[in-house]
Image (cartoon, rainbow, N blue to C red):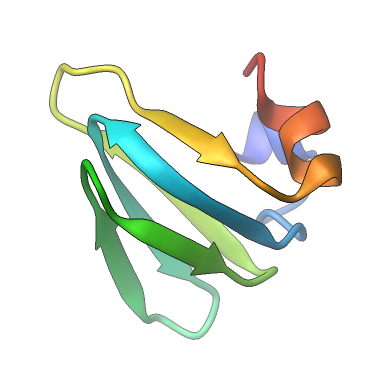
Length: 73
């Protein structure tokens, strides 16, 4: 995430739903969230994320700024 965000952690809020794949989100405070197909999510600023497994993560973002910046990443 750092190369994409250009900061130590992502500073955008994400609101969306997972279509496929799995992702682990680790917040700056140490809390961890694991997401999978069908999960709706709200991820607050101050987090890092990684895709779990070999399947591509596909999520639909409902925060325009976050979607514009990370949709192609």
